[in-house]
Amino acid sequence: MTVIALKSKRKASKRHLSNDEVEEILIYFSTSLLEKDTEQDVFWDLTKNVIARLGFVDCVIYKINPRTRKLVQRAAYGPKNPEREKILEPMEIPLGSGITGFVATTGIAERIGDTRLDPRYIVDDEQRRSELTVPIIVNNKVVGIIDCEHPRKNYFTEQDLRLVKAIASICAIKLKQLEAQKAVQQRESKLLQARHQLAELKVQAIRAQMNPHFVFNALNAVQHFITINDKKNALRFLSAFSKLVRLYLKNLENDTIDLFQEIAVVEQYLKLQRLRYEGIFDYEINLPDNDSGSTQVPALIVQLMIEEAVENLAKNRLAGKLTIRIDLPDEHHVAVTIDIAIRQSGKILAKLEARYANEVASWSDHINLLKKVRKYSIVTDKEVIQGKGVTHYQTKILLPIL
Image (cartoon, rainbow, N blue to C red):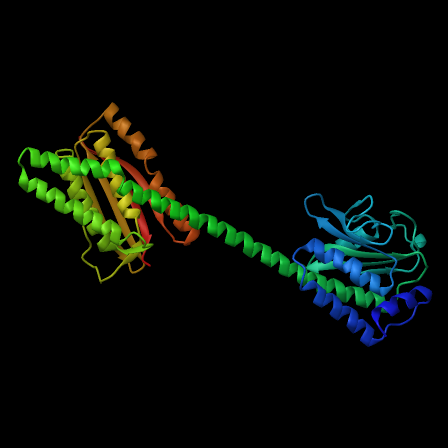
């Protein structure tokens, strides 16, 4: 016997469904759900294609709105659904109100033989004698209600109750799957956005390293040395510049870099800038004695920090010393300390301090994105130390060894 024939017979008289008929209904619903991409599609499929096949004349699917703590009608079969996937005058029921609201709070299905004897019953479009109310439970939490009504008293049977419970369980599994898929999509979307931002920051960092202003100034510096017949400095500057460009291009696509290779890049940069800004700053690099070989760290961070420190000195035309100290406190971390020592005071120092606070956007943004995208544990700290005639502006950073 087909399910379509079953529907017409149940209208005439109530009878017990065979195991094969029950199995056919459940298989149909389970298979149909595979094609559904939204919870709304699931609800309409349940009311239109399953409840109707059971011979029920009225069914409404409610979804709980956790913000308003109300049950909201989301799909219907029967008088509440005169047009395709449209509910006529949808109503909202507070949790705990009516039979549906009560079941939403208890999570226990109920079969009411005569609604006139139940004071909880709420009339929607018309009074019906029988009601079958089953919760949809996801992760031990009621998320919705399947509410079926019939004008005949004692219409719903124990078999109907068991069958609708089974359908509610299948529905819950699908809703949980959709919820998991939505969470994955949201995570992937955020990750993709963060990766895009990280790529943009990397491009900005490379542009900052190789911007036309820097390149032209470097070439002008070489031209200046040649013009004053200072061949030694011209060759030194040109050699440092070519090595720096080669190192930049070599590490262009890398997300990680060997720490001491990055220090080599930094040293070439400092050599170049010290020649360019003669008399503005000196530098010192202190490396650890306990280096045990390749130490991979996130790329660009140390370079960006050093470049901003040098530009800070150059913009303020301050004579100072830049000290870089690298430590390996344990086998999992690299500690980098950048110290700018300035022999100035008053307004000039105040100006430098303001720049020191504001001009760390590129590497601090880079670090924040690395934390978000790569889940790196990176700790930073800034400190201003007043010494005797000298002010130290220190940045400390703890990088993970990758």
